[in-house]
Length: 316
Image 1 (cartoon, one colour):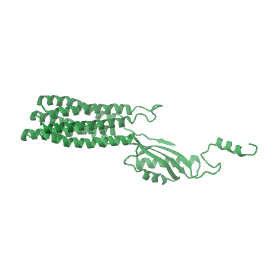
Image 2 (cartoon, one colour; image 1 turned 90 degrees about the vertical axis):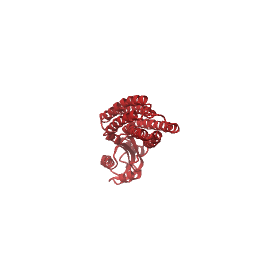
Image 3 (cartoon, one colour; image 1 turned 90 degrees about the horizontal axis):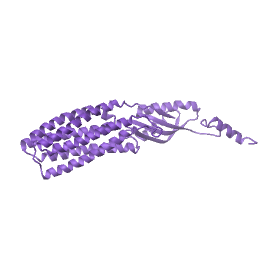
Image 4 (cartoon, helix red, strand yellow; image 1 turned 120 degrees about the vertical axis):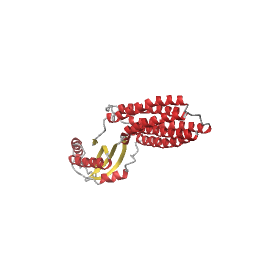
């Protein structure tokens, strides 16, 4: 017996914020590139390159959402909901690569700090900060319910932190001529981005490996099912994540002897408990008897029982 209660938010709830963030990021990629070329700031040009990859990542997230909301097919019986998880994994991997590049560039700048037009660098960085803050704002709420959107949110957050680093570096260069401040702050920001990216990659990987969700303890689920009236034992219990916030469970339930029609209440009670206590919305149960004597199993179809009875009668 299975229950399917997939209460997913409509795709527009995620696509609209992503489209706004994409437009902001794409526009300021061009602005920062021009600002970097005019000011001679390698920091701004590097950040423009960073924002370009973020633009690609946001576009990837949008495509993933479009794919994820396609209906199931005969081949893809769960549909394409894990396209969002693949996008989140790709975004996390991209962030890690970006961070490695940032750290490498920062080391080069420590060795040989470049000459920078600090006033123009500061002006462009402040504008970028405002734009990135807007992008972070529109994605913040949805990032809590979708790992895919969280990947896009982390990209925007990394842009925001980069803008802060560029502003601080520009001020230090402008007032104290501390050109080394740019690469030093870049290393600190890179470490923060790397931490968030690594968490995103590990969370995505755990979902793709069908691990038990971090918020759920398998033994606690087992004991909770056993408290349901009519359930004698539970085995072959599996809990995994289909997509962000969408948990699935399968299990063999050993029920106390009863009519098959009476088992529907046991299953319904299990489903209700799992949905309320663990937010598990997709359940599949295989029912088994606690004890089955000869011809006593209520789960055996009538025509099978009749055939068995004839087989043991004299003359058969």
